[in-house]
Length: 118
Image 1 (tube, rainbow, N blue to C red):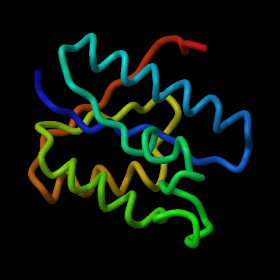
Image 2 (tube, rainbow, N blue to C red):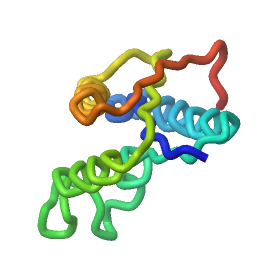
Image 3 (tube, one colour):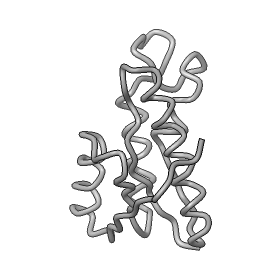
Image 4 (cartoon, rainbow, N blue to C red):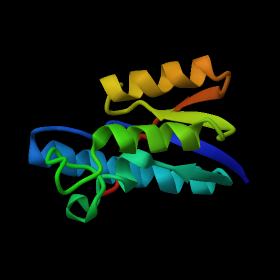
């Protein structure tokens, strides 16, 4: 298996859109596994339980967004490829991940789906 960083949209102030983005990220993870890849989705992992020290706005109870981003980037530097899922557009965070992959000389593949999984 090759190790891949997955880029997909995540953050949204709209709860329904956030839910849809999370479902889309899960679908992307399954797709990578079907491609025989070992996916890593820091934006999905590090945001799951902010009250236990991952990502939240309150720096007194959490390590914070910046440390979570740095952790994802550290893992990404060791990945073989970046896979970008484009059906829901390319967010600012995804653009950053794509630029980082380019800077590190990592292969980038763009993918999409015909239908969404709920």
